[in-house]
Length: 390
Ligand SMILES: Cc1ncc(COP(=O)(O)O)c(C=O)c1O
Image (cartoon, rainbow, N blue to C red; front, side, top):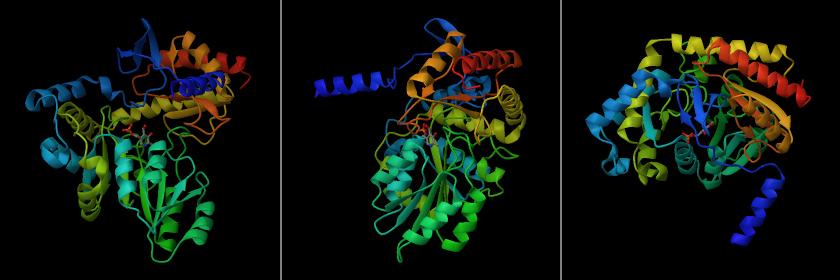
């Protein structure tokens, strides 16, 4: 077995696709120390920089002081401390849904929803670039799986016509804003098709929550569809600066998940610190839009400078900025050039993105100063020229 693994690892290395864990220590909302050197973090999903915000850290500490360090039990047994109830109610209200249910991670929430609700005889239609947690979840479902072209409602409709089977339920699954491409799903068109074909929507708003929409509740609000998905899922682990995820829907769906979702039933519940931090973050962003507004000023600044320099940012909008390089090894080369200048980022390669589209996935966060952004743009442009991308 070990010989086989070694030879597979050698292949991965030769393709420029080898991953190493890089240890870091955050020192501010936007910077980290790695191997003794300070970097501006250009790949954080903490878009609002809340993971380092004093009020959120205090909220986590207060939860530990009141409730201890761990729940030490699954939610079905004795892990559902009362912090869960308040947070489930607040997040459901914020996003326009009737009921909420917290899971330990987004990965587990997606596995919980999709392996439990669509079943034999049902058909799932899934965007081809959906996140790996959605893909793995579909692998565990007994429903038939049909992939439609990325953000293509016409292809979805063709496939709905072709594969809808009488008697079964139909489900359409999409990310709201795609994690590696930063582009927005055609939620309005999907909603139109829903009226025609009667399917159920499952929307993953992991990267839209607290970032998109006038009130910041997410991409559904941005598209005028707040609270409209049949099942909505998102996480506390990105803009909300903590960890954990939630599923929003009506009472029947939530009660069914409580009774049948194995990733809810058979795992230890999130610790009090995570719940306290998430509640603190939600309280902050729901009452003060300046966090989101500052982030969008930074997003506009970075995007306009990179576009002006000649980068093709594809259809991305918002804090996720893909710079597609192509070959795995070229993406790694460009990443190392930028890292040398003090900017931390990751080359994203298959299987996370399709082969031949390896990229740098930059992210913009609220705590970036203009000086930091100017430095990052300078380094990215210099590397982009060396790689002949611009
Ligand atoms: C779109 C999407 N869905 C789900 C997840 C999983 O969330 P978590 O990291 O909380 O497991 C992620 C994050 O990695 C994601 O990007």
